Image (cartoon, rainbow, N blue to C red; front, side, top):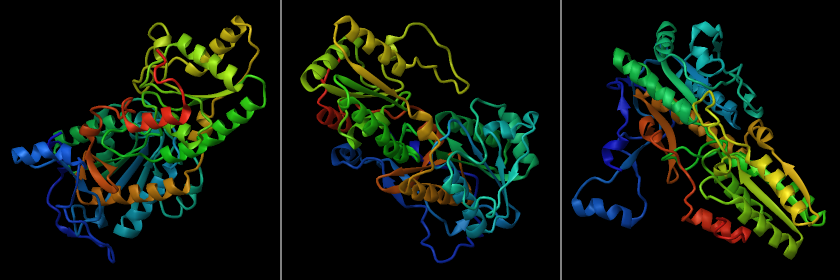
Length: 427
């Protein structure tokens, strides 16, 4: 990581005075160090170079856009996630009350809403319209997956005189936002593209955590608790819970810590072999008489054969590890002649559709506000992140270079192993 990697694109000079009053303005020079440990900073000190740091997010005294002539747009893409409506509401209210921006369009059903061939009429978002939406799950704008023609999207922005486009979504959405920003730059237009990272899996790089994750972990406790009650209520009872996590097992790992009745935690980052797991499960049942297993949806994909293709977002389709485990566990214990009872729970869609928790709601409000501040200051191709307790600006191309994953040699996974007591190696 170099200092230049964290430079934020700017549309031009900020010439207008912000209409905000009674707030602490953020100086453009304020920054948050990327590294927070001395040993990581030492190489930069020794070679006399500037260590990498994020630009701190916040309201600027001078802004790029004239609020009196500005129109903005909001789009939500990908899967549903707790907090989407909170972010939409925060953006609309901040634009209206902080900056006196009167025209805000909500584009329906993801990037489809910016393609006229789908005939999705934009929704004009007002403070009255968004009143109370933060108390509901889902997105008032709807959502969809899959790319759209970038040229057509930019044409729509120009036709509607949009100055700032707020894109709320995960990795695929952010890649689309970067492509839109690049096309805007190629045409020499002054349109800002601001991303708000939305991923229930918490897998966006260079961001401490994303909205929806805390709610998902809190809601998962109901499922793990239920699995435990069912398991102890039967002789040789097994409770199996499948949670979200395509490539990153943060939800499953956190769920194992949040309810330490979990005995086996399986995540995509840590491989396991079915026979080794089944033998360990048998030992657990013979010793304690019950067990709870939590599995992230992307775990154990090596156990499936063949190419399953891709979904509309370009993600590889996953084999259903929950159903595979359910069936193989039953087959194994029937084979060894040991009676057992298994209860399988998949709460994924219940979790995705729930309203945000109090913590996530407050987090979403701030994300929305900081996104508006960044857009009004003329920044573009940037997302609002959170790093070392501060809200930051993260260049979208940097955030989409990889995916944040649980480190099998890190402290989080070490804590999971200590809490579950499962074998360190299941291969």
